[in-house]
Amino acid sequence: MIQVHQFLGLKPGPRLIVLGAVHGNETCGTVAMRRLIEELGSGKLHISAGSLTLVPVANPLAFARGQRVGDRNLNRNFRPTLHPQDNEDRIANVLCPLLASHDVLLDLHSFHTAGEPFAMRGPGNNCGTLEPFSLANEEHALAVRLGVRRIVDGWMATYATGVAERLARTPPANRAGLLSVDPFYGMGTTEYMRSQGGISITLECGQHGDASAPEVAYQAIRNALAHLGLIKDTAPPACPEPEYLLLTQVVDRMHTEDTFARPWTSFTPVSRGEVIGVRFGGGAVLAEQDGFVVFPNPHATAGNEWFYLAQLSKPT
Image 1 (cartoon, rainbow, N blue to C red):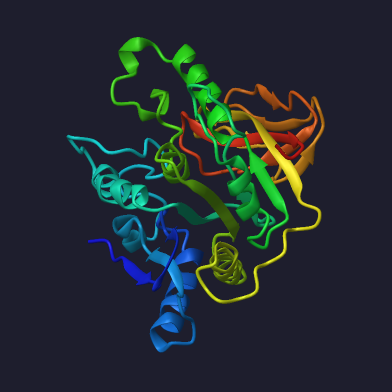
Image 2: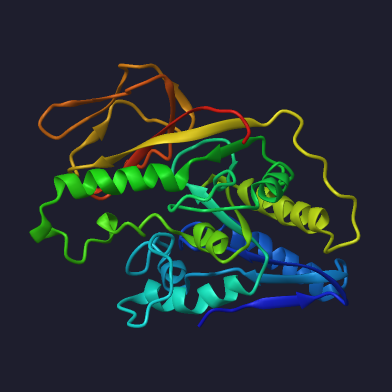
């Protein structure tokens, strides 16, 4: 069962949906939404236009277990299926039509290692085949008003490159049932929302368990409500000097004994040629260019993403 809390204004306006605990051990959004539900129920906060839908626990099985996934990663290969095979397939069949009935998605997450909160947005306006989009300006306007200064782009294109690399190294006989070589594997909640004509932001609110992460999540929801005009509150100003980063590469962990050269945190600068990790057997994993380490996961399973690399970018 997935609990959904909905609040409807009496005037027309955007339809905002907020997700928490898509990954069951990322609970900052859950805490923030429970606080918001109490405020809305007591009358301290009032939705005056549009609608607000809150899903504090999007993946109840993973949440109950206190772990990232139930059977698999809900935020990959996120799409409806006629023949659901696992817990996350069944959840996607419930959440996909719910997302499609809204205009804006804010998906609240946290990350493994220490680091500054940041927002992930979609591509610039384009008519391509990977992720066509026409609402980049509207999405950007929301991203810079959520209370964080760092904006990260390039998820889908980087992940598509990673899928191509997995395909190249995985013999056809070994691909059956391996989602990470599916071209749709990079599609998560926000990518699906854009495919349905909406805008969406993934907000990474801080490290798992960071006491400040629920406050980051709460303020982001309040800022989104004010920016979209769902509450009668002063619209938040845009971040005056956002930092833009573009994901350029995903590197997989090939063996459980692959190790990092040091305890990386997200957005640690690296120089071209710097050793990031060491493969089982002794080969060094080097930075191919100057940039930043993003999403380092020392507990990544073999064959899946270990870390990303990003470079400074410009607004699109």
